[in-house]
Image (cartoon, rainbow, N blue to C red; front, top):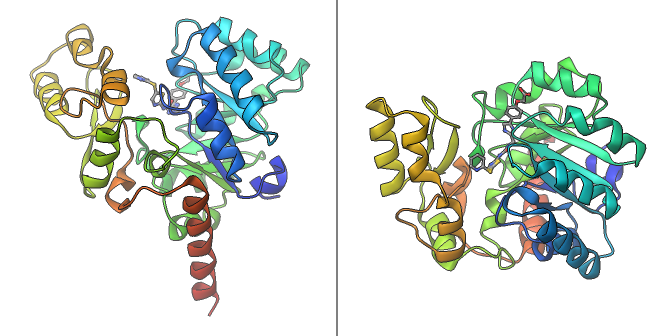
Length: 308
Ligand code: TUI
């Protein structure tokens, strides 16, 4: 069954976690446009997460969920908020949701962890995940090593649960490719940065439009947490110091608060502008509805061409 049928939504699209960006308002806009919107708990605390969930409920009667960033120090309390507020779909990133699975099951929550390897996908299936999101290193933000092209089919072969593809998907050709690899739908992040509804600073949006195919880089591959961002003076300095043998503590001074600086202040020089390798394809800011419609039309054109 395809993701849209499984979740009762219009398109087989699920929004990425987008910590510090995906507010209740933004998630509702994604859901109202026909995808599955997710509130990114990564940049919130338990109180603001609760407020954002309530806001989202006010703004949409369509399905939506919460993305829990598992490296967050307050994630235990945020998991409780998710249960208390009756949220029914949770995606997770940057760790294993193992210790919450029983409680989620008890409350009828559908759990869809993001995985970056086959071993992790199998572990998530054993834990009772309803599906997994196989995320390639083309993605923005915290990334693994494998590409979407290699990871998705290997995960599809290794598990019985449905697989959603993520990383490197921003148009209809890539959506068709994801289906060809065996995915039932896709997770989108970067292409949604370039939407009217996305609450990031205008300068961040402009940087997304300016960036070329090779406009992103992964910081922290050697010494820290690997994070894909748009190249700027911060990323250059980070990588220089990383190559010179700086340790995790020293490198953290570059990243502390840097995502918030990019998102809220539009600091495109020393901020951390998380984005995937598809940035080079993105040329205009559009309403989310149009992004979805155009991507689906492109998918149908691709499939017709392949069938001919
Ligand atoms: O989580 C993401 N992407 C993110 S989280 C984020 S917020 C952040 N900001 C600064 C530093 C770090 C994070 C921005 N982007 N994607 C999902 C994802 N999960 N990618 C890789 C993983 C992952 C990695 C290891 C999941 C599980 C895992 O190990 C679990 C285990 O128990 O071994």
